[in-house]
Length: 326
Image 1 (cartoon, rainbow, N blue to C red):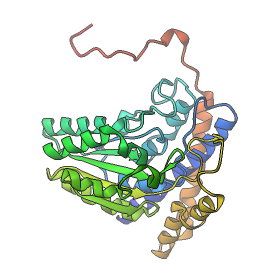
Image 2 (image 1 turned 60 degrees about the horizontal axis):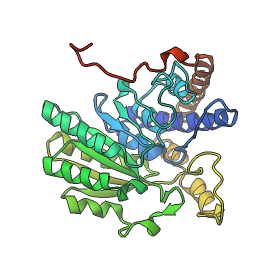
Image 3 (image 1 turned 120 degrees about the vertical axis):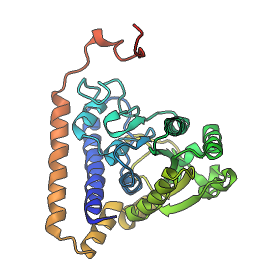
């Protein structure tokens, strides 16, 4: 990454972290309904891949997807308003936490269905090929989605037709409470790429530069018409599957395991050290940090001030009429 990209990566990672932290506070205050799946700890996997994209490239996310729009450059104001179900949200309050879409930054869908974005991303890449444009699709999903049929069907189709799509698995080690070792006959997820004739690579998901380099290679390959790639970013979620969830029975991961990741593999703290070692001065980083805090504060103020959708607009945006049709 160039210097400006490195600083932008730090800014976007911080925007995700501070947005999620504030979102959890608003959730506890009953300002955000439903569920709240925090991506704290996974910022480097998201931002490293997104920084490798162009503005006109597109992306699909997951149910744990507040971070993905931010990684692609989304505005925080309308994103926070959407989490609160407000009319000022990016989906007019209709999408909520798990169904975010923002055409302005190329987010075509996010879904509460495990693996639901994988066939959509494959179809989007097929569209780019049919339109003969060099647009790339980036598809995020978790380790739990790898055992869904949609994963296998999509990767096979993308390989056969050499579609410009990058499949990025955020492997945080657990599908809710079930570990990869307990649920995958082949725990090395990247090896599955060989079955579909595409490159598969594993990277350290807490290293934003490593993720960027892998994504940049995959983007170059996709634009050249050489087809899809599978990237597995080994990462870790610092919070529960969804915030506030109490899981009965024996803990599926120890306090020591979680604390070790927070202490040794916090992607933001690690990257801050890298930037300082590269000669970026402390003042520049503090300026970005202050800027992000203010942006999140303004996002909350905007969201709280936004009105709820009016009941009479319930059916708005439910149907799309192509040009020439009523």
